[in-house]
Length: 256
Length: 287
Image (cartoon, rainbow over all chains, first blue to last red; front, top):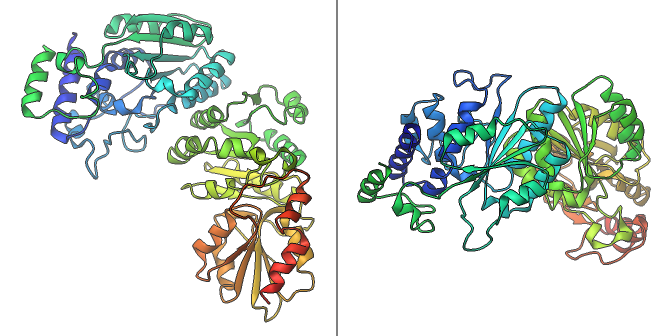
């Protein structure tokens, strides 16, 4: 595991332990996607409302802690601020608020919303002749929602080549409604599809920069909770819990 | 009134290149002139109301003044969470213009009746709710609100009330003030025509509200000492009146039941006692 990913995961674990909140496994599965997107997109942590910036939207909003720790890593705010996560009066809620957190472009939480707004943004930029791009992470569990597929149809029909959907294929729905063969589904919906190791920042970055004349999908094949074996082996128990002191020590050890 | 929507959009598009129309595969033929005159500014997105609303939020974020247009029940009852979160919670401006409110699609039955839209929208923080009762009201109120940065819900109706009233966003209208009257009839939208026919010789006051949110509390308070009856073929106005006026209003209009009848708008209003005779009987009983 490369250094940013390990550092961000350590922050997630420590903040989750400190606050008593957090969806740790779902945060862990998007860290490399976040690092790749924020390495590729045009943005300025010193000026989050820069008018020429690209847009990132976390449609699977319950991975907010992962987004906060990544934004802190890229310099949007000090990581120490995030330790108030989920507390009354904190600006760092368990789901992000775009009016409170620099770098957050859309307040998300209820699944299936961010993708549609991302499509509208991409359409707006295209309509205006702007070169701004839109990146959105959608979870495979979130893809149980019909709005995901509505939005994909519209994006393809509008030839939104400035839109990239990163699909977190962490198989979170294996116990109910799995989204099997997402590559074929996205392709059938009219997307340019790349399937990559979702924990390889370089591979994700290369997929993000591939030229395409239509909307792009990056199927990021991830392991929910990786690299912590305790999480990977019990993802449902860990879905929404924070580690106690002993568990924190174990999980930090499993990061190495 | 739908033609007025087209004409007003044509007028505004000429001076505001950020006005853009997102349609749910309805009224497209009626807007052919708009599409010819302003290519690429009417986007017929598809029959996907949830995505229509989410996209409008995105278009607003990208600097546009989006106008979503489709059929009332599908974009309000079905897409309520998109309106609540993507527009209202995220504070992205958008104007939702619907047709088919209340019983305008009477013949299509209960799946196409929509009398909850105004109240559903009224309950959302930041939302403006307008029910024009004439072409003039639509033109003035749409023009006043479409680019103000707020989410706005507007119905266009199949009929009009037939009166020429003063129009200002957020201001109610005293249609008739009867000296010494103890009863005030409050209404909104095209059904004002039936209300006026019903009350032509009754000693009552008549108040009219094209803007349901923000409701004109100042005007209501002037009549708070009277007994208020809300006559309306949708929820929303009654709740707005009761939320802002200390006098508990009574209501005449919808039963707690689906309307399982077809026919015309007039047929349904007659069945519900919302024709002139039914309204007169109810208002007269209060005297």
